[in-house]
Length: 255
Length: 304
Ligand SMILES: Nc1ncnc2c1ncn2[C@@H]1O[C@H](COP(=O)(O)OP(=O)(O)O)[C@@H](O)[C@H]1O
Ligand SMILES: [Mg+2]
Image 1 (cartoon, rainbow over the protein chains, first blue to last red):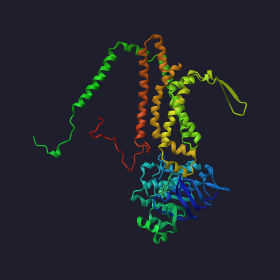
Image 2 (cartoon, rainbow over the protein chains, first blue to last red):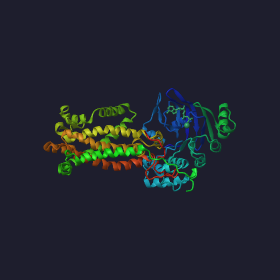
Image 3 (cartoon, each protein chain N blue to C red):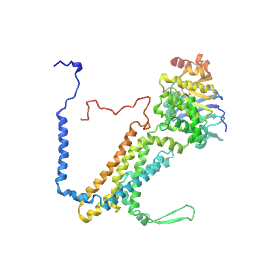
């Protein structure tokens, strides 16, 4: 099964009714690369990320993830949506971390982390539990496995969510503003886990307003505005010397 | 006596005439009711007590309970199916479920019960078989639709429509993010429903289902018109012979009251457990926000 950890998007288009949210986005992430997407609210960042793991359908354009067409197969005149079974298998190789964590409140932290392997991959419960404990330790939550999401702080919940995504052994991790719902003092612990992941060679696409994180960790930055990729390039280069006026304006406002 | 300083004086709300009037009125009403029930000979309390645990009454009681449980269980399962159908993106499927609910909620249960009892007039013979094979059994509907079958079919189908709406409300209470999180892990429809969504509908569904059980218990009395010997029908059979209508209706009422009160105990326990926090397992007290006690009313406002 292919899972080379790459993403290629060309001229990706997506509308909600008559509202065109993505107007021909290009994106290219190679294996182990960290790509940060920045841009004002409503510019289509979340939509782009949600297209990459099939939470939204795509109207037009090329999207190849892990070296194969994602969610659709190419036919003579159109791309045809794949069967749900195939989509689920493709999704299982992509981890997603949401702004609102979206932990399952009816399961403990450990249960959340185990849920993917046990329910999707049919991994033996004992094996999955041991792996869940390892992953929770890896995100700094040793011994919190028995707690329910409601008993954890936002930062802890988000780290459980990261562990839950990692439990599926994805080749790509997508983060949609993972620290935006957190109290300021809890942001650091989540970013630290993400830095760790980046150093271990995970392919990551991160929508974020944390410019410090983007500068330190990202290889590439994509600045989006109004559904188009306004500027794309080396992270430090774009953040320090933006070429486009709109990028400069945005950076002045958030920094 | 030393003078109290203003800053040391307690603040109290003195009793007002209204507080005493409320008590007086309530006591007068209860007292009057007790007086008439005790002194009015027509209640025939000795008759009530003599029939209270008669065998036929107890048999009726048991049948009432069985009808309640069976119709409730079957109705809930069918209701779950209808709720899932209703949430389907396939318009024909959700349309069928909507049609079902509209039809069964839009007609009186009593009419439905009598209808099922007489269904043989519409379909005298049906034939159950496997399509495209020779395997099939003709069924005589008239023989099949005994009063008891008609009662269970009628109560179940009606209950399913109401349970479907309750369960649908439960589904609506689960946020979109939960579906998306399950999807992003690669979960498929049934796994997602069974392990992620349905457990989260419980806080909304369980208390409402408790109400339905109590409602169903009383609703079973309607099947007395089909001649099913449940509690009410059993008392009717007796007073048809003895003409002691009122005391026997009291016997039935007392039994219904006892059963609904017995049911309301677990009902309120479950309700409290689930309403405290809709998104929190019962045993969990949160580390983030310490467990608060019952809210204490300290304002002066009341409805009137
Ligand atoms: N499901 C949806 N239906 C209709 N409009 C949507 C939907 N999701 C997003 N949008 C619209 O698409 C635009 C881009 O949204 P989003 O991708 O969430 O932006 P961002 O994440 O950059 O803030 C917004 O104008 C938003 O209102
Ligand atoms: Mg967003």
